[in-house]
Length: 437
Image 1 (cartoon, one colour):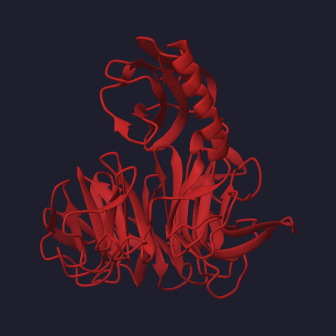
Image 2 (image 1 turned 90 degrees about the horizontal axis):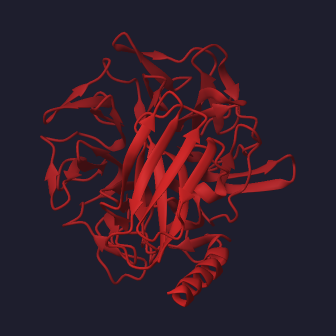
Image 3 (image 1 turned 135 degrees about the vertical axis):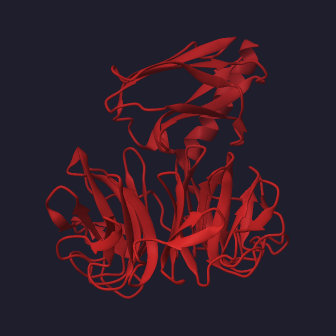
C-alpha cells in the first residue's frame, strides 16, 4: 500500500507541475465561436455558433456538454446561434437567435429541451437569476423582461435600446447595452434610471461586481466598446464617486473590446479582443486579471482571437470564444491548468486544516474566513474532473466566528488523488487536494 501511495504521489506531483504551466485544449473544441459557458448539474456546458466539434466528427448543434473526455450533443440541440446560458429553478436556460426548440429562448431539464411559452420575438443576449426570478435582456420587444409562468413581462417599462448584460449590484438590478450615455441603468422605483455621472460613451457588453482599492470596496465594473471615462473598461460606485476609470491602458482601437468579466474571490478576469501594456511593459492580450491589492496582470498565455465567455469548472478557469490557439492548439475553448484556488492566494482564509491526509477512513476540513459565511457547500472531484456525490458534508457552521467544518468520507472512493472546492453564494472560498489510501 505504501509503495502504491508513493507511486500515486509521485505521478501526481509530476503531472501537477506540468499542469500548472499554461492552458490546454478541452477536447477537440468546436468548429465555430463559443459565446456562453455554464455549469449545470456538475457538468460544463458550452454554447454558441458551432454545429460540430473541432474535427467535424461529432454533430453538436450549437450546444454541448463536456463529459470529462469529450464534447457530446445535448439532446437534439438548438437550431441557431446561442448567446447566453444560465441555471434557474433546476433547469438550464439558453437564449440567442433561433427558432427551435423555442423562439430565441428554451430550457433543458437534464433529459429534454422545451420551449417557454411563445418565446421572445428577437435575439436574447443575456440571462440572470435575480431574487429567484429569471430575467432576459436583448433586442426583442421591451428589451428587458421577467418570466412569470410561461409569459415574459416587460420590466420597468422596457429599456431604451439593446440590453447586452444584466447583473445584481448591492441588491439592485443593473442593465447595460446601447441606448444613450452612460448606457447603464438601474431599476429604481419600478423604472429604469441612468447611473449618475458621466459614464460610457459607447456600447456596454459586460458587467461584474468586484473590489477596487480595498477588499471591502465593491464596485460595478463595466466593460464594452466605449472610449470614456476610460477605454473599454470603467467602474461605478453606488455610495458616491460615480463613474471612474479602471486605471488600465486597454487600447482604444476597433475590435479591442472587453466582451466578458468574471469575478472570483481574489481576481477579476477580463476577456475580449483588447491589447494593453501595464506600466508600459507588461502586455495583456485578450485576457487579463486584476486584484484590488495589485494591478492588472497576465494569465500566463494569450489566445489568438477574442474571448467571449468565462466559467469556473471543477476549480479551473475555462475560456471560450473565437480563438484557435491558446499557447497550444485549442478550438474555441480552453482550460487553465492551474486550479483557481492555487493560482489565487487564499487571502480570505485565516486558518485551514485538513486532517488526516492521506485519508484512511474519514477526514475533517476546518477553516476560518476573514469575511462572513452564509451557506458554504463543498464539492469533491476525481482526477478526471467528475463530481462525486455523498462524499462530504457540513458538520458545523459558526457564522459569528466565520468558521466551518466539513467531514470527508473515503467510503466508496478508490485509492488515488481527489480535489475539493468549498464555495459560498457561488463564490469559491478554498480548494485543495487529498489522497485516499
